[in-house]
Image (tube, rainbow, N blue to C red; front, side, top):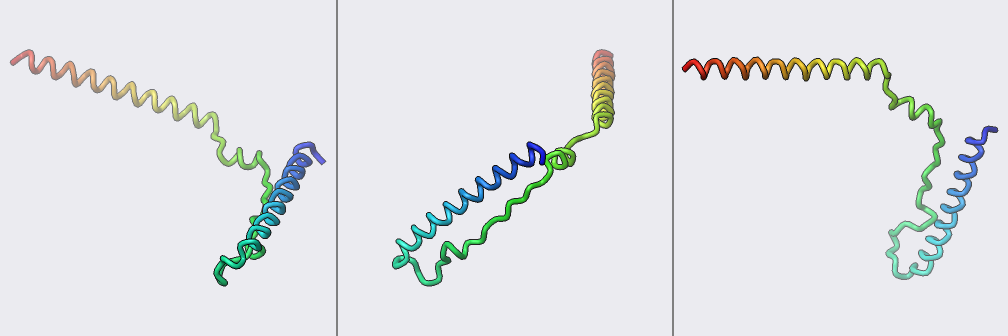
Length: 103
């Protein structure tokens, strides 16, 4: 068993023990408040437990990882787009100046 898997299983066991302790405390507090609760209030034993799902962290990271070649291409396209826009604005500015200077 890998160290990573053993550590995850240990953490899961700790969390389950903490949840069990919280369930016991909730049940104790609910039994102390039992006369004050309306009959339709759910008891602590009826609270559904959330299942613990262990997934491979590398698979999760792989879902959000981007291709470095695609990133380089996107950056290159963005730089060219900004350069083209700057050149267009420069040409429009010069044309505007020439037009107003003739009048």
